[in-house]
Length: 112
Length: 114
Image (cartoon, rainbow over all chains, first blue to last red):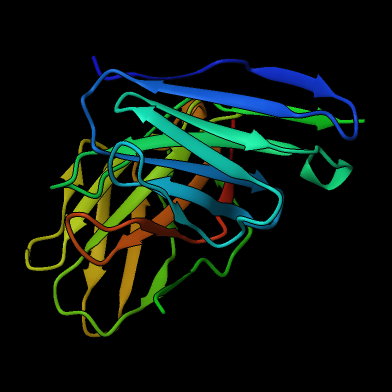
């Protein structure tokens, strides 16, 4: 059974803190993605990666960075969290020969 | 750039009835992929059904089927015999190729009345 896991379901941080969101997949997928989900805005792509140590900006990369040191792990970093980054963050992965994405359970981040 | 439009933010259906969720997309590609994803309240996003554009036959998965109209760039999801567990947010998504990222619509919230 394929699985994408995220390090936390709920996270509360303070403005200015550095925040790490971790995502791990066990399907040997090449591609990994980070989205944020906000009411009325759907899913917006933050960053994605097609291979280890590779990263590409999505539609809303400002205020975020990513790291992919191992194939199975893709980290999203908020260098200095702000209240407008309060959101649901979803991680997903896919095989390089199939665009179907498999999603993690999401992390609901609140920045106070 | 490709866009995916789900024009209705909310829909409601009576249990055991049939409901159709609409989706249109814009692309200049001739071969692509389309998906419907389901996100139940506080639960994980899962795939409902998928369609490859080169296939003329509409995809079907149990109570879920699609009406794929390539010329009209329309990809609607039909849920038959609606169940309470079908209540969720549904997202339509498009991919230009096998190694492409997904473009999502804004989603539609489906409620099921007992």
